[in-house]
Image (cartoon, rainbow, N blue to C red; front, side, top):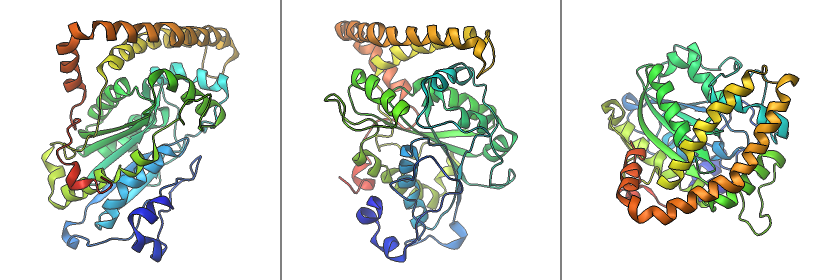
Length: 360
């Protein structure tokens, strides 16, 4: 595996690769490492719960890179891969993909299969790895945070959220922040990985990946998804978290990942995202009025929404971005303030990259 060859030859020789608790749609390219290297004293070992749902396997790859240094430091990690009672397909048929929007926006999540971890298990740190669907957290993560078991596991615990998506995660993270607070958790850090392609290009490459499973170059556009070097660079967060756990910093309630470029916010996209979120809210309520998910009665409304979505992507979004670019000199101070606000709690600063990012 790429990560073993680049990062951990000792673990490769021992042949100790991560074994997922659940089968996921795509086998991760970067396995979670098991073997401890220079573990802290036994009395200071911490227990970490990683909750993950990944359709494509990309998010699992990133989680593997974050978790690897924690295991190498000797901390005990349990990965819980969420499994919906009715699995979501990948690639997604178009109708099923659109039909998931109303429940996703309204946070009306279907049930999960029982977790493999006991609801009363004690952990020192919780890492929630989630995807973004329709500017909202993917339904399996919403289901976990709504469940009694999920609430019990994160109550009074420090929580780190990790997202991998096209480029719009702000609304989804705001929902996550609210759900974590309602469950009694304490959000300490957030990490966001996004597609580095141009926003207009990703409007083509990302849907193509979701609907066909193909993510390679297309019509001169770059491959979809988070770049491999960005995925490998995720190990810096694992190293920083391992150090924080060694020094009990997770108990402070303060961010542990500052200075590592954990999030980078484009405030222009934030404005477009807020408009899209409001529109999705209206459409989700309208479509649900025609029937439940999967019912034929709401197919006509889904068709109209699909046409609206295409028109919005082709006209409204480019126009909004152009206007913001033209007005950017007048909006500079406002946009910078919005950026600083939305990048909390972990921030986009880079003062700790030299210390933890060994790929630099």
